[in-house]
View 1 (cartoon, helix red, strand yellow):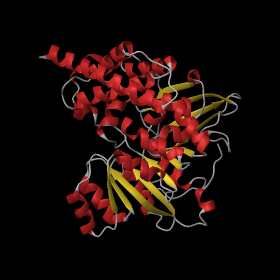
View 2 (view 1 turned 120 degrees about the vertical axis):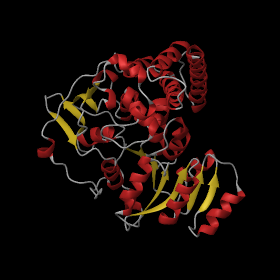
View 3 (view 1 turned 90 degrees about the horizontal axis):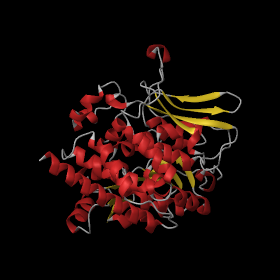
View 4 (view 1 turned 60 degrees about the vertical axis):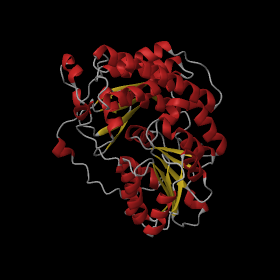
Length: 409
C-alpha cells in the first residue's frame, strides 16, 4: 500500500481530523499534539461513549463540526445543551454515527482510539472509505485481521500504527516499506513489554492482586482496561496478533521481550544480523505525532530522551507461568479463523469482571483458556462471522464468571 500524504490533494489546507474515543487517554494525547500545530490540523469530529461533560469541554475547546455520543440514543436535552454551549458542534447519537464520522467525505484522517470490540465497526468504516487511519484500536486487526487488511487495500486506505510497539516497528522497517506490505530482508520482529506492575511479584501472591494495583502501571498512563491487559500481558498477545496482519509477517518471527524501562519500544532484526531499534520516552504523544505528521517529523511536546540519566537498559524473556495470557494469544493466532475474536471477547468480559470485583486477577487467564477450549473457531469471510464469534465468546465468558462467583460464594 502506498504511503500517501493527504495534504497533497488538499493544497496544504489543514488536515481535517476525526478522533474516535476523544475522551480516552489516546484521544487526549492526540488533541494535545494537534493543539501544538494549529495551522496544520483542524478537528472535524470528536466522539465519546458516555462522557458527556468531557466531550462538551473538548468541543468548546476544539470546536469540531460534529460530536458523537455513541452510548446514547436521541436525546433532545443533550442536543439542546450542546447547542446552547456555543461550541458550534452538531451532536449525533449511537453507534452508527461513529461509522458516519469515520467515513465522512470532509474527514481526511481518523484516529481510531476506541478501546475493544466497540471500535471495530467504525475503524473498518474508515478503512473502507480510504482514509488515513491512525490505528490505536488493535482489536480491529485482532478480531478481523484478514478482512480488515483486504478492505484497506481495496479502498486505498493508509494505515499508520499508534501502539508504541507497532509504530516503532514501522519506523525500523526499510524506507518505503508500507505498514501493510511484507517487509523484505527481515529475520524477526521483537515487541517489547514492560512486564507491568507484577513482573517480580511472587506467583502465589497474584491471587490477591486488586484492581487498583493492576491499574498502577510503572511507566505508562493508560485506561483501566488496557492497564489490566498490560499486567496480564494479554495486551502484548493482542499486539502479536496485530503485528502479524499489519506487517504481513509469520507469527513464528514475532517475539516478545520484557524491557522494564519501556525505552526501547520494538526492534527489527535483519537477515544480515543488523538490529534496528526505536527508542523514546514512554509517552503516547510520540507515536501519535509520528503518525499525524508522517512522512514529516513534527513536535510532540515530549521531553528529550536522556540515556545518561537512565543509565541501563535490560531485557528478559517472558515467563508464561506468570503471563499465561501471552501463550493463549499465540495459540489463538495459530488456530486462526475466529479464534482471536473469541480470545478478545473472553478477555474483555474477564477483565470487566475483575475490575468490578466479581473475580480475582488469576481468574482472567483461566476464563480465557476455558472459553477458547469451549467455543469452536470457524473461518469467516464477512464481518457477520466475526460478530457472531464475539457474541459466543462473550456468553461463554459470562457463564464462566458466574460459575466462578458461585464457587467464591
